Length: 63
Image (cartoon, rainbow, N blue to C red; front, side, top):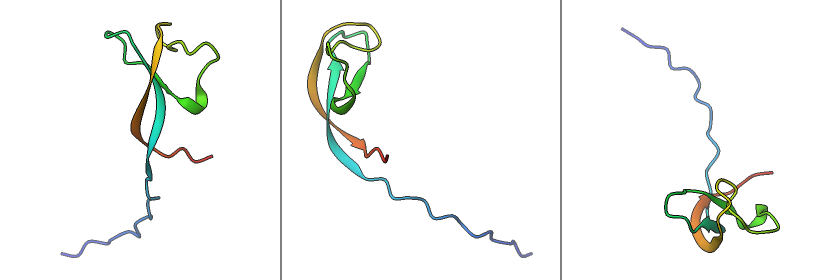
């Protein structure tokens, strides 16, 4: 029995970068935001608590 292989689309390569993020200080909240997209007051977008600067390995955002 033969199976027809459809042409496979090439998937774009995902580039992982060390990215500065502001993470929520509240232990019950998982909120964080990239440094490039922070609000003026640096509060957590989910719960409103204070945030701290961290570095995370995240995929590059293509614009």
